[in-house]
Length: 438
Image 1 (cartoon, one colour):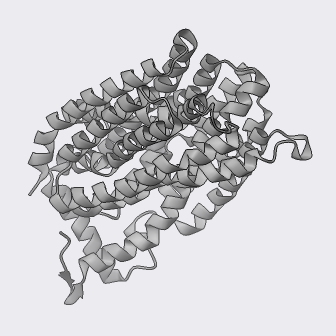
Image 2 (image 1 turned 90 degrees about the horizontal axis):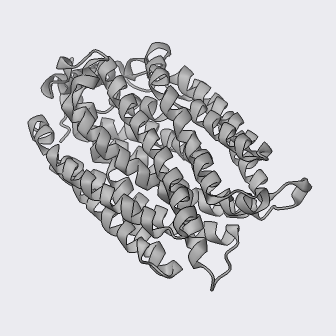
Image 3 (image 1 turned 120 degrees about the vertical axis):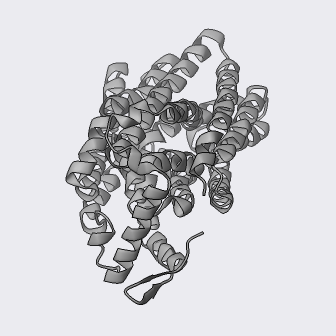
């Protein structure tokens, strides 16, 4: 637990200072991540109308939805390294402005190839955002309080579904206004505000505690000292170069887990609305109605993410929490595979979503405890890059299996099995977690 300390005869209340930092940074970072995630996955809400109006098959949709992750994977590591060179403030602003404009440009999609191209460019534009944000949190929070900070930040990816569902539902109802389809309104109305928000980053974020004019000098010194001690305590100083990240077995184990997480997350984000529509024969199954149904799993996931982050920090245990969450994922997707009604499917997807997003707080602490400097940037980027490949394979394979078998069950069983394997790998990382505990 964080303790009070003394700097130059001035007592620093550690818990109070971390609370101030949290309230100062997390709500804004949270907002940035929400708009990022909405632009990334809103194609899932637009899918029903796009497929019908543009004549896309499930395979075409799955390929286009997944192309985002190829662009992201190819440019994530270079972008993440640029963050360290030019500073978080400037590079995150550039990323947001770029992807916001590209997201709005999705309104011009007319063919499969234009769909593939725009989704690929969207991934290129967003590459480096999440690694940059996670690295940024390490500049402010030592590892013993970081899981809660990461969990609060990562909760945005689940709450993006809570926000994105009703927002997308409302925008889809604008079908025909000004001669545009509802899905075109969805892309332009959610993309342009993102670009505008990107400019605010230049004025709001600071590149580390030493540049924060809202901290007192003694608070800056105390925080820098805490972060330095944290790095020394957990052995992070042994792994400082970029290549060190690729030599650590623990990083590769975590990468395998993260790939499984991302496959599950983006099957949820990009296919759940269509899966629910497939079960909604007895209900109104227009895109706006299905978008509103999709809110529940994300809301429950957001609450569970906070609970797991608190539990993980309280017990200073990480790998067991990750493994337990992945067992929930396996059960949720297996249950969804045999669901025959919207209500049961929503319950199953809610269980899977709780497990998927619940992993994120403790998961990232496992990595950021082990490495620092360029190795931290490289390790985070390597894991998110591999995860992006999972984000491509999951949605694409789901579309192919749906077209070839006429059912979503095969894809759901497959991701359930992957989650079981990830749970076992999570247990195997317990030695890493134990070695890092005091």
